[in-house]
Image 1 (cartoon, rainbow, N blue to C red):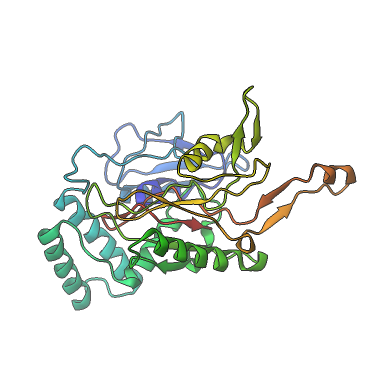
Image 2: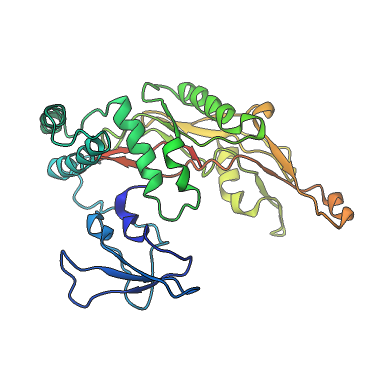
Length: 315
């Protein structure tokens, strides 16, 4: 969700062919070719990427998630000089968006941020910076097909959350807003940032709404096989499912590094879509369905060096 994927924003087909100079420099470009109509374009935007991709002339690995280096951290946080670098880059982009780059307001804000980072290793984003950064993260997520709507993302600031109950209240509001009676709306809820290695806020679920998977004694599965392991985790915390095909898993929410707590999602907030076939009426007899709101909840949001381990999002 951060800027590491920028190198692939100019791809003009789903199957790009990348030609890379043997000796790249600050002025080099990458040739992108649309294999359908053979059109070509030169990309230089990749020079602004924070991380180097492993792509070469014969293969594109842009769809792979790259995990930031953890080796240089102190008590879970990036080094101060790294945070200052990323904060400086973010504020430059933010104030350029406001058409106030290098203004007195911009320079004063940067000075305040650097001072705050030097004092405690991180800084507090304003609500406006948080909103812009969250939207920018979606814009820069090259693997997401829906990011064209990045500027319409509704960002809910939940950095005030203290307990799992606070988190659950915010997520219920998110589900209600995002589902919108079937007219889905893009939203992200951002919980408190990482302050050290031991006090993260986390949503343990991969997505806010998922179906349980129950493993039988012979290896068979009732429900979603992808969620068998997480279903067992929920059961270890006291949850008891009904053993059905479409049992919605509870939320497992962790606040301030403490043990997670279980919360059931009210049925009225779970919109499901029955799966039918336009020609074969008998297909309805399978009684298949799926949840309408695909809200990812297992990613980390990084804005200007500040990390948010809990930020459920639906596009």
